[in-house]
Length: 262
Image (cartoon, rainbow, N blue to C red; front, side):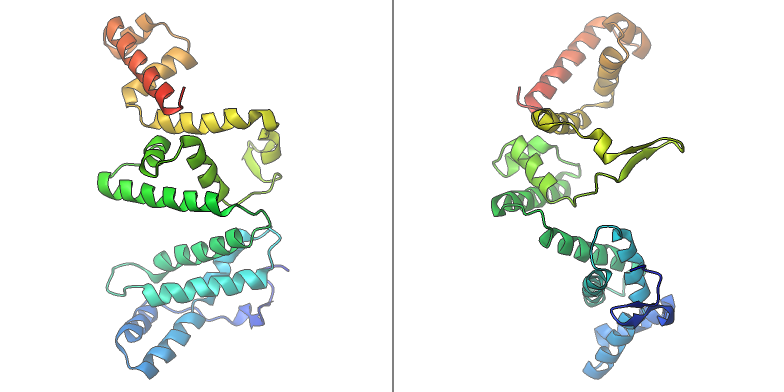
């Protein structure tokens, strides 16, 4: 079924209403402060007036083999949750709040009803890891590394990576990851065999560990190991002594080895 055709779930999409921002604000105020009868009437109008928003969101999930009617219904659940939890006193458009809620509801549906089953223990690890990540961000203001998350939930880096990857939506091997206009690279072109599994996990952990290095340390490692420069050349380029370059490089490498568990 094509999304821009007339009906989804028996709804004639060509006749869907679109509410003005002022009307949305008025309806949301009634939903929060009106009488029970007024609230119910305003909520119905708010839902019907935002069905096109749901339609626009579920188009992002086309091509996954999912029934569009099912996605539309799930998106409507997300819309209703957004309406019930939105604070009209905030200086934010309803769509700014509603779209992530609708997307989240659709993603939960796809994850929970995916044909690829994930064990309960891995899901539990993933949810604890996400909670730990949010807590670290709120308390420290920085994005935690895999090792920080692993330490917070008393798990290994490998288990955290596997758990978090397990709840990411699967993508088609035919999905393009790069195109220069004439040549396209697809996901299947980047896949290795089963012997690459450990290397793949280590690369994820290493990439995360590199992000925690200082800009100077990243710069030194880039020049040394990607550009092939000597410590003396690096020292001349960034304006410090060769001994300082050696010390910074050594400390950075020790931290990276510690992060990946070597």
